[in-house]
Length: 301
Image (cartoon, rainbow, N blue to C red; front, top):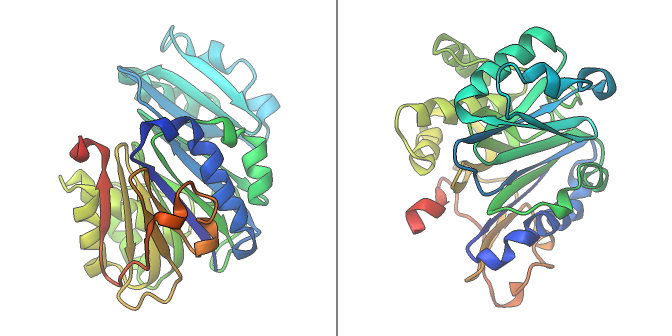
């Protein structure tokens, strides 16, 4: 039993409020998962720049002098510290080199996510504490997803928290349990994917990354997941410009969606949506089993 939320904004005037709206939605879901929590926020990308969100259990040591360490790779690099996390901004063509240097010189630092626009924050603890710790309420963006976890199959750790990110500007939150994740993990490893945890949700994220690497968009990748993933699952997924939802054919995990002229929202329960503006006039529905719901800012433009 976990809690999932997601928000995809159509109305640009709401973008400064994305962090606050998504935070409120997640905090309401606290009793569905008290172990750990996380949020991914998609902000406006900067031309030629990339973000790498990193985490450390010992930030005072691991983040000390981090900008100076990375300057030889990219003189324009910047590091913004946020408690146990930091956001490294670098030239997009140097992002790979920055990650290689981090792995070599600061191996205890873990990458939470990277890309042109996404920032991912997750830690052990309650949603209200995670939201406060990283200043999520003050963040602006176009869309985002969040998760509060009740661990059932793997350890309660920062790396085991959601969202899981296995590709640039891609991340996934999951409520459920996959039965064929071990076989899928072996197949994906042969394809060159790497894993940080034993969590089945990370396998789902990696599967979607691998499918999109073949040229599929998020909607097409989620459609393929219905054939290739076994078990009970509700996925909410973010990409640089997209937002997708899918439930397995049995759809025993709770889910509700709402749409207005201003946004599309997802919650494990309706109470996660009740404070959204205009919710009383929204079209509210339960997403159908084995049905992909997919929106994309670029396709809507």
